[in-house]
Image 1: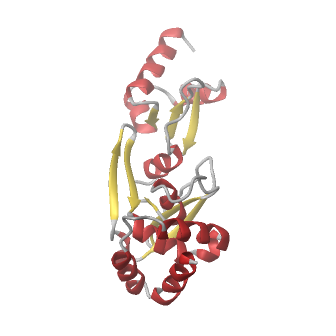
Image 2 (image 1 turned 90 degrees about the vertical axis):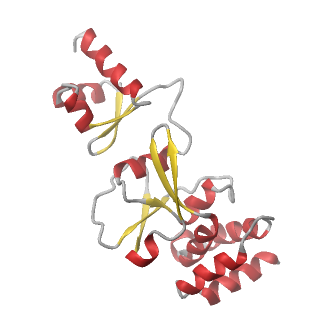
Length: 204
């Protein structure tokens, strides 16, 4: 690859804060052969099909990059459950698998470089309590605190009792918790009884 081509490509990525997609690269006259060569040489990383990251060993990837990349790859996806609880500060260690919510009708592939647990929602519940956060890398869609705690309890079989217990205990210590909001959502999702039981356990 010619030096001026390399410089053009790296400049393009830096202008996009490190990320670019296939359409943007094609518009800039970067060929698929050149993209493949950059990946093979370890200059860029293939984040997912059609999405790339300029590797920067000194700077590294942004905070919460897994959430950012999931929302980038699927613009309809929302970070949920234990992963959203991590974002909201209820747990210190990021879950091994990223919990992502999508509509039941959404069959788009989400093949990323890290494990993802996908939870499917109906149209009625999908948009409720969703927050949209603008980042330098694109929009991050994530559920609000109370909904995230409730969903963590709903998906307790997937997440594990230890992680659920830790999140509930942490939530019960929050001075700004909104129990009525959490229980209203739990009742709407028909898991009010189990959520109330877990919250009582979290007080003990």
